[in-house]
Image 1: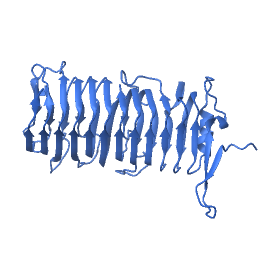
Image 2: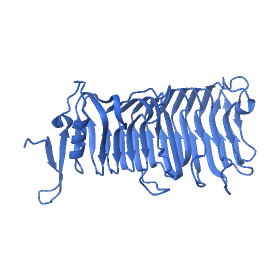
Image 3: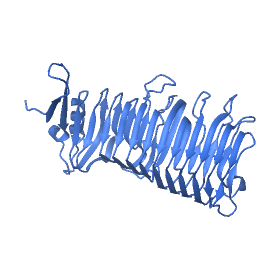
Image 4: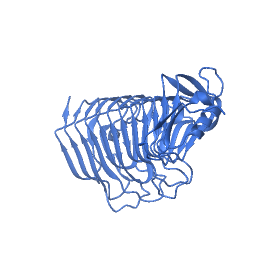
Length: 383
């Protein structure tokens, strides 16, 4: 039998009985770049061979996949591209996701391009999706390129198999990637009938969202999301959506040329219980060009809450070219706006300080609903 191991490296001292770390290439399993033939069986054979700690190399070239490939129940596996490898869906494609990952710990995906079939930024095609991480821990998605997915180019969430209200997607880093012409990058568990969390302890840093929305959404309590030093541009809709996430830091990002809201924060109407959330900080960002501004909705009329949503901070940002071209009612023409559908409650502890802004005709900078309490607004200046 021909050996398929490229390299085995012992990570232990000679006397220790530790497992070997194996490095494979997809070409050993029959994948051939640039031949316009289906390589999904070869990729699946390679993924099924991997043991904990192994690495799979994808050499330079274009690989066509006609079926979903999957990686399940592995620890410390790395999938690394060499050169400029591309994994593309064929048409027609059998399945929903290009790559399905479930119950892994310590996964690395580095330097791969994932290509779908539809420009979801122009017109969504629900169910046409890219990489799915379900109930993973300590995952890293870095230096990769996702483009042309009608729905989620990248979905990071709790598996639909988990118990109600579980949050089992944890510690995910998404860094230095490009998401282009896709419906969304999201933490939503969209399976019908589920009431699950998204991903807790999640970091988006240094990514380029070009024609692709970032949507962090949950149907139960989930916390700790950092969105740092990203660029959001040329988006045919809202740039960033937040729903039932707490302890969110949105800092040092650039948002420009957006045909919707800069940021839309709102309750998840598909949740079947009251969800406590808050602590959202929007600091040191540049917002330059959008149809609407930052919208903050505390409650919908179906929620029976007894406490306000606490601690919203918007500081040291720059706003310009917020147009409201298709918004006629003056009450909606504010760059920062809060609202509630609760008869008594909205936000508490709202700080809007040290921002700079340039107003278009018939617009205002701030509109705060009358139910919001403990408001600190100061040192905001026109450009």
